Image 1 (cartoon, one colour):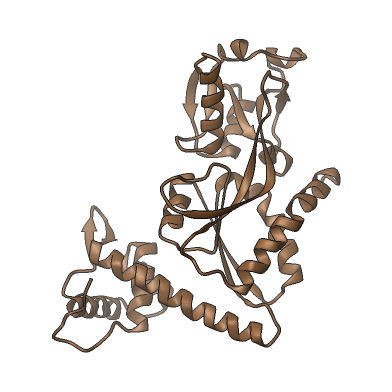
Image 2 (spheres, rainbow, N blue to C red; image 1 turned 90 degrees about the vertical axis):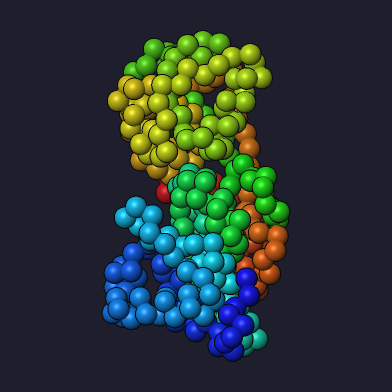
Length: 313
């Protein structure tokens, strides 16, 4: 998108910061509050930016402000510019023999159960590193991956609509959970056919846990009896404990999360085994900090979590 050819001016760093903040907060007043400037100043700066590029950068949608296509183009450039500046600082620090900088990580919600332990261990080795962690559902994290907003993403089921670099670093087991007093809990092993008759509580569409399970039942000519969809593993555990249905969850959400009155049962073809994968947008230039984190996760991730489980944290 070309800038206004009648002007030799370029967007200012403050204007680029405002675009980033507007994309995040969708409110001029909240942007002003978080950047510690007045709301009129925010409005003037964004108007000047719109005048500069010759197109409006935001619009009203309902009660929220959203970026226009022009605003999104500016946002992409702003993200790239600030990332380059962060990389410059990191490179200078690295030349001085110290790994520093800001590590940007976005993960799907289930990864929140084990990732803090790994980040704590990494931060202990590299105390001058700042870590920014974003947690969200698959759709949100996939959108961040497409926009190349972070150094790393963690998925168990890799998105197919963007070119990525991915490294398996941790086993992921999907297990069946029922209320602790459920009739299925009395059996030493349960068939898929029997399981299919019970109401299921599943994660949202696009969730790796959901997709693995639906595909398994489909392969055996069975259909899941879906009763409820919940976009939170913690909420699913509570719903199962309350007797609303049975479910499938990553074992990590049981090893490291709150464990209500639910029980893992033995079911044919379970656990479903996959891998947690460290994912990078293929177009992102890795920093020395990113390389250090990648090496740490691949070499230490499994051992750290195995020890934590054995020691009951």
